[in-house]
Structure formats: structure tokens, C-alpha cells
Amino acid sequence: MSDMSNAALLWAVKGAGAVLGSAVSLAYVLPHGRREAGIRFAVGIACGVVFGSAAGLKIADELSLPASIGDVELMLMGSAAASFCAWWALGFVIRTLQRHGLTDFWKG
Image (tube, rainbow, N blue to C red; front, side, top):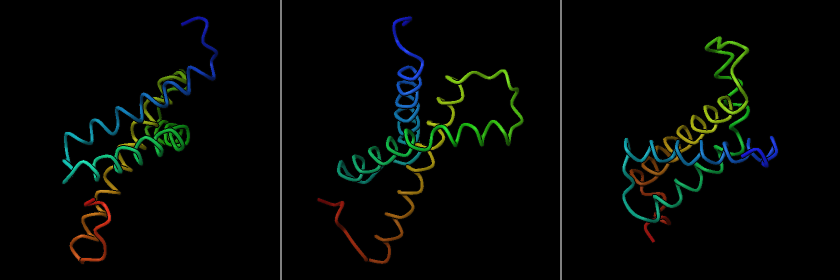
């Protein structure tokens, strides 16, 4: 692990946090099919990687976490939270659209 640069480590942690956030979300809200699961999982990972840094900083600030919290913990926490929120938000949007019969593109 010492050969890995700090930037590469943070990217790996962001990815791991995003995958873990989506996996935890799966335990709470099961998708209706494989296509919906794939879409929600991909969006969760993308949001976790893209918004993980900002989400981690905001969570640390709101919870008044000590400044000694490391970059790795901050990225993991933020990526998992962003992925978790994206999974739930997309699930809400899909269910709302289904309820109103506006689209069924994810039924495959």
C-alpha cells in the first residue's frame, strides 16, 4: 500500500465508499428488477465518487467532527453518504413516475 500515491488512495476510497453506500441501500429498499437495480447502483456509484469529497466535508462540518479526522475517513464517509442518498432519491423518482404512469423505460 505504500507504493500507492495519496491521490490514488483517495480515489480508491471514494470508489469503495460509493459501492458500500449502494450496498447498504440495497438492504433497505429492494429494486423491482435487475434493470432498476443496475441503474440505481450505477447512479449511486457515480454520485458517491463525484460528490464524496463535498459530502464528507459538509458532514464533518455539520457534526463538528474534530479536525484530526483523516482524508481517508472523510472520503469514505462522504462517498457512502452521497451514494446512499442518490440510491434513495432515484428510487423515489422511479416510484413516483411509475405511480403516475409517466414512463417504464427501466422495466426492460
